[in-house]
Length: 269
Image (cartoon, rainbow, N blue to C red; front, side):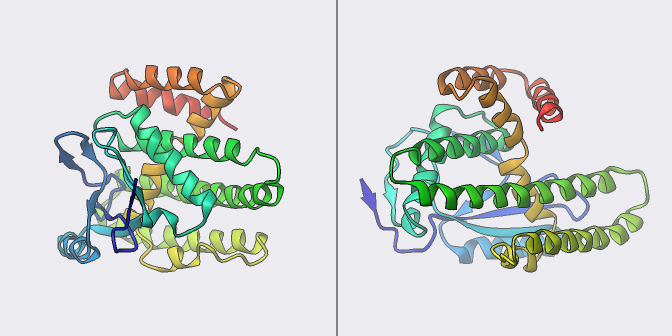
């Protein structure tokens, strides 16, 4: 089933964090529990609420999203917003959203999104294993390598900022240190970009309101991705066994689940 929403994105997600924290604000809903972002059907509504958070001192980020999952509660249609970037990108979105139907944990956005990212990657890899896809496989390989390198850079600075914010120094010193770390991030991104031969695919993202909320968004979608990739590798790509492992993690109390994921991250290359 196809639906044309008559707009460029399915929703616009708002992320907000305190000035000196990378812990995203939470919004709670009946069926999905509490999540680290709030979706809006119009950009105007999202920006209006973002302005309210900004006025209270929060860092904010509003980003368009091409699709969302109803977790199997309804039949999710194929949206016009999913078709903007090409066939492979559309396939990636489908795999990502279907992953949420397979396993979803209430109140744990980072777990859910990181899991879906890895299912998306594996789904696209298998999709492109068909004969005649050699050039597209190479394009996707380069895209994935650069996306993962960029994400790793952002997560590294997310950790640096988190250490700063959690330290016992006065808030004034934290405020003084915050711009310096973001400046270092920009410098390291410039070096990464140079290694890519000047590829500026992430320039706009980096050059527009770089703040805690943006890094919180990246953390929500990618914080545990390396852990899930490792689980999949341990299962030699057997998705059913991988899903069993992920379900076992999902069934744990949150503190124990996070401890297991962090242990996997320490093991991952």
